Amino acid sequence: MKNMEKIKDEAPWGIEALRGKGKGYDWGEGMMLYGNGREEILVNTETKEVWTMVDENGHLVGFTKDDIDWEAIRKLEHSGSAYTMTADYGGIGRMSDFYNGKCTLCWTLYPDGRYFADEDGYGMEDNEEVVVYALIDKHMHVLSPFRP
Image (cartoon, one colour):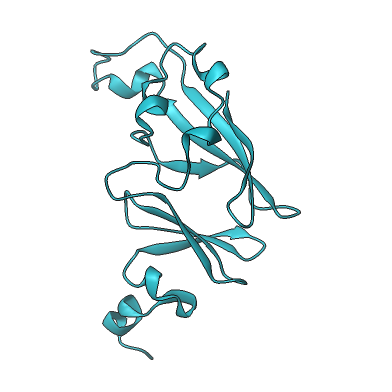
């Protein structure tokens, strides 16, 4: 059996960029998400392509302003995270695993009002969660920009 420290220090899939980057999560069809709390890295294990979606500071670095439907975003009440391109409320997630080479990502721009409440309910806001979605392919091309 391998020493646990040695396993922890290995480069997953032989990709040096993933060394020490946390745990990997299978997103289907040879796609993996690696993360260490804040940073999120998407990997195509077949082509060995690696994309940092969210950096250690919570900024969306794997996307550009062109990957956001600004007309739709302007209509949202709580959309500040889109303008700063930050993932302050849980990073970038997925709606489902990759299927036919595509995956729908979700990005919470603002959490449900209960997020701000203490155990007695103090501080709770009266708002719904604000989430936007984008469709990507296995090469991290945005096929449909982030929109509600």
